[in-house]
Length: 340
Ligand code: NAD
Ligand code: TYD
Image (cartoon, rainbow, N blue to C red; front, side):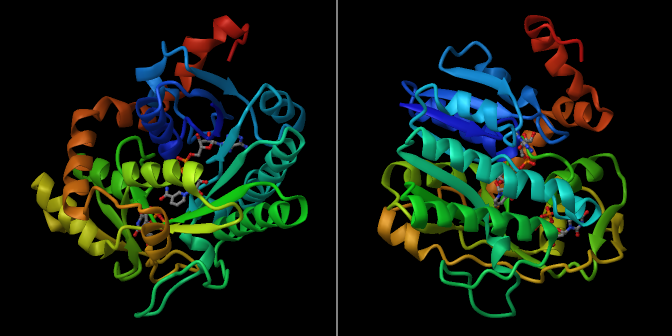
């Protein structure tokens, strides 16, 4: 079995590549990533010598390259590559449309041409917009995205659906809630708060801090995607979430308590424009139809995550100093005849 995984140097993608090589050591993985600011080859150090893993630096919008790679006997495409940070999408929407919409369509074309047996689009619950105090997102919830990020992800999802309906491409779309765990770029809430608290810096809380997210440990997301690849019914959407709704303030206080840092670091700042109030996933479909069950609850997951960031301080300090971006040139530059 040969998989093409895009965005495999990012947070969830790198966790997924590591997970799949452990679960299915016989699978061959081609890992395609453009290495934007969010891509970090240091996430993949453990498998540098693994002959089943090949890294290719490429943009998913490069149609000729995607055609070439998928044409080399790829069975399954899993698309993680995306611009993923809501705050950046408010500042710079165009690159979100390019990667998340156009990039998805380029991959779909190559997947269709080469008759892949499965195309999995890794999407987000944010395409459903925001919830009030009650109710949960189901797969039937209408798409009402509120940020340029979620709008671009919804655009990608609709193209995936259309390639199934129009061309019979065997697809699945997964929509997951907020992930956390090892290798998350420290611009997202949990690693940002851990790293700032460890440096005794102010912790920026948007608005009143009472927005709710439904947190899922990244390994549980990986196990769900593995299941969808193998058992997902073509054309179906699967929501993924672990029933762990927490306010942002709850998250921040939990981290402060576990690190032994004072609440006086909490600093309220101006709210994010269009800030969704609440996300909550109903995971009944993937639970009942595919038998998926998360292994971590929030309490165990956050403890493991904090321990990881404490043990891997060098990983995130190299991101903060920008040093991680030199790793590609050191590792691959000479071999590929590149000078960057
Ligand atoms: P991330 O930003 O950490 O990683 C994205 C990766 O994609 C990076 O390695 C980046 O270099 C690569 N990339 C970006 N543009 C590219 C392009 N044009 N061509 C090739 N590679 C490109 O993101 P993440 O948090 O790992 O999210 C992965 C996927 O999961 C995304 O599709 C995101 O929408 C989705 N998702 C994320 C969450 C979450 O909580 N992080 C939740 C649900 C869904
Ligand atoms: P984030 O990690 O950016 O994920 P998303 O916006 O995709 O859910 O943010 C999670 C929540 O934390 C969201 O409600 C915004 C809030 N937040 C802050 O309060 N301060 C911050 O510095 C960041 C990055 C996020």
